Length: 375
Image (cartoon, rainbow, N blue to C red):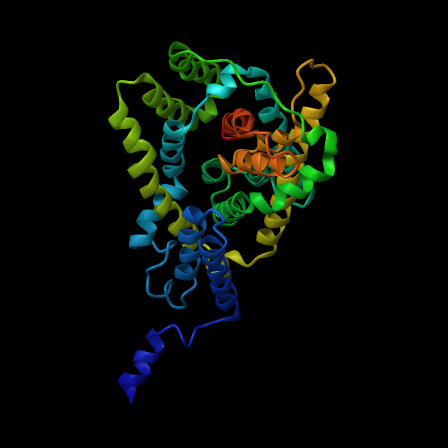
């Protein structure tokens, strides 16, 4: 009987709490959304499973959790807590990204810049809700809908908030097809939704090679604090476009990014233990994240409408939503919503310009904040 009681005390049944139950349900919902609804399954499935892992009672007491020094999960979480994984993800993103439309129509970079307005609105809102300036800066990046950048900045400025910030950022990235369309319809007219944009000019191979080099130098000078993200993003793109490093580009955009995505999803999810995650601060972060995402989407759309006041060749404002960094999902939303009103209107290639500009913009914004606040 004594041995039986000792065994029971080592199981999770005796220490199971309602908080653990709630978080396990959240993890299962994430897995369901990824599998059944196909909402960013590459993100939500590993994150959801990680949430379940992190909320098995007794894991921390047995020294196996992400916060237990020396545990396997703790070593894997090192890449999150020290900001190692995000630059590796940016390398893969760069190797997958085609900047052709942005090069052909550079004015669309302004839509990506406008969408970053959500970052600074959220920054101000976080300060008003009682977060300190470092925490507010980390929370603000959620407005860029860029999970890796959110993790990178929070790991430097507010490491104790990495879990809720990452979960919020990735959750809203996955819910792009749900959140953005109502805002897009609300802020545009039927006439604007059927605007057909001119086919972009043909971009030469030389331009594609020169672009990542020049763009890195310019953005690096503007935001040296974001050098790790920017360097990896543009290096990945240079590997893709150079034509002589196909093996490296293919490795970066397949094997490397897949492995890092699994590790970042699992460990971020596992960091959401109920006793750490279920706090008033986490709830505030989720509310702020939702608001920032809606503001960023609205800012991109409204700025496209503003630009049309001065342009002869009009921009379909539906592509303004793609200014957030959720690549390529927000660009796909532009295409889907546009075709609901005109089956012959193809917006995807145009939407990719503000979409990739948003990736650059969020990295630059993070670099600026890190340069100012990181010392």
